[in-house]
Image 1 (cartoon, one colour):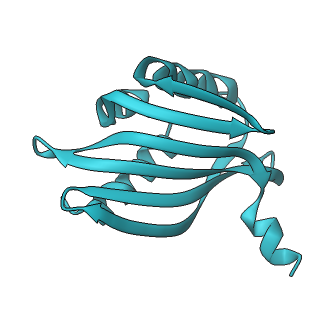
Image 2: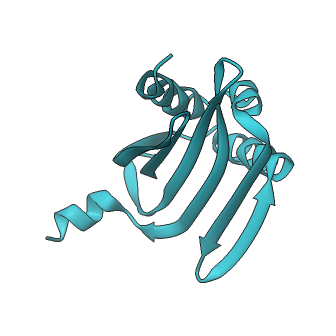
Length: 134
């Protein structure tokens, strides 16, 4: 599967709250850093899966939609790609003013794509609102 096909499927399955897919896709040696209001938190596979589970549970009974805004996709090694994108939320028909900006590195190994690293700027200005203010 090409990276672009995988990445489209990744976004779709995450939007569908497919925790089993994410458990399989996140590499066991996953490393992440999230920055929110200047505070940095580093975490790995177990914390990532738990964070996804909590998010899915929180939004389970709400009228919520995830909006992906792709920024760029870059091949950084023969078998690794870096995807930069925002995830914004529409809640009860309203676009929230902040979003999360992701820089995710995926590696193709053993016939499948794995999320190996992530850097997240959390709670940043929503890119849709940024375009509207120009």
